[in-house]
Length: 77
Image 1 (cartoon, helix red, strand yellow):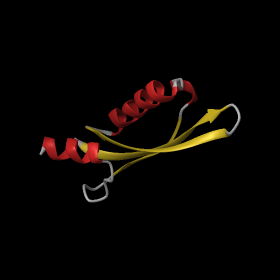
Image 2 (cartoon, one colour):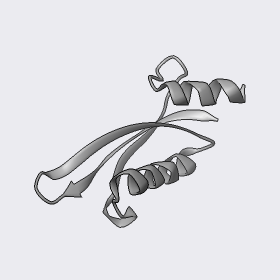
Image 3 (cartoon, one colour):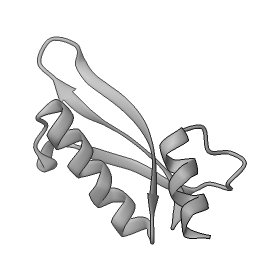
Image 4 (tube, one colour):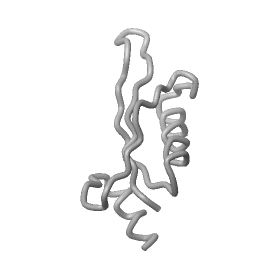
């Protein structure tokens, strides 16, 4: 698994837009995007069609801040 940083936004009724940056561990960029859709849908009840992904960037293991992602990439190696 490789670490990825996924950035984007989704609409909120009062605020307008809620921006997000999620670190995820995935095999490729497509799987990283799917994980973000799943996380935002389950945690914030946002439909996939409303989530706008702006960028997906691979991260080096040193750049990862999330303890969960660090654990998952070390477990794989």
